[in-house]
Image (cartoon, rainbow, N blue to C red; front, side, top):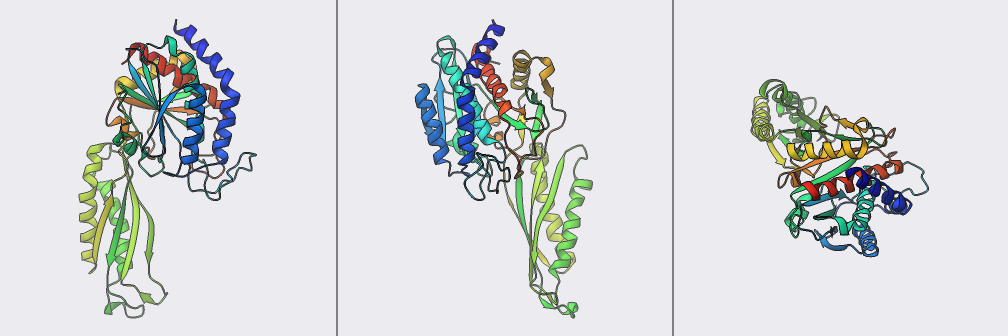
Length: 392
């Protein structure tokens, strides 16, 4: 029975493929950054209207479609729709027409795949035993769109028992998909350090307090947190990304500011870092005669794939693609993803779909691979059908 359903899904995916690729190119040509995706949302709604799929807005520019009316299990599928503030450098016929905005993370591909899966599932609606909630989510790139969607009722009416998403991945071959149990992506907390000294002439450092020297010692000191204060088996990255201070070669400034990011893979380690950072920063500055302030902005939680949902997705991938086309991901990545917010509420799994030989994500030369779209549609639609029948 499952093989027959696989064949039906594949045939339906092939029949809509040309249209889906055209939509992907149109979205790519007209990218929109976080919380400004009104045109993209309208394009999604137009497609859903033509397909006869009921839908509603969520979190401003998010769209939720619902298919099925059976009393079986309910599942959610999610795609992100926003672009990046980056200048595209692909020279494609459908390159971005908007300066400094581009789909350099492949969200246009994710959006198109979920549209294709939605159309396929609509054709199968009479045979679906449950319901599927289709989430086109804004503001993944730094805007916590998932959190906004949840607060606006994305996991209600209907209430899914689990949620699944996929992300295009250049290091995996086309036609393949990957899964990982447990931590898959990191939390994304940011911080600012302000070091206050006493400005003076550069030739008379003894007459002031040099915040640049104190800042340099802080940069070195906070690396001791990773090497000496945290379990060495717990992944952690603390990176200083900016340092600003001074205006002349012969003047010691009053103040220096530093900013950076903290990446962890488990909530316990994440909670340990802020007090250790503050102690190291304040006391290191004090030892240099300066003062320092530490301010952290909480970012996304880590993406932790739930065990039963991941096992379900793995088994579905084996059946849909064949074992030879399914990859178990050995290592997590320290990048972040706001899909984590959904996983804090309900079981789910964040999967990867192979894009083949492509530039890396968030690169000006990156473009989603159209050849991966049929595989993505089969995976998303196939997972939904199986979940509606079996649940976890």
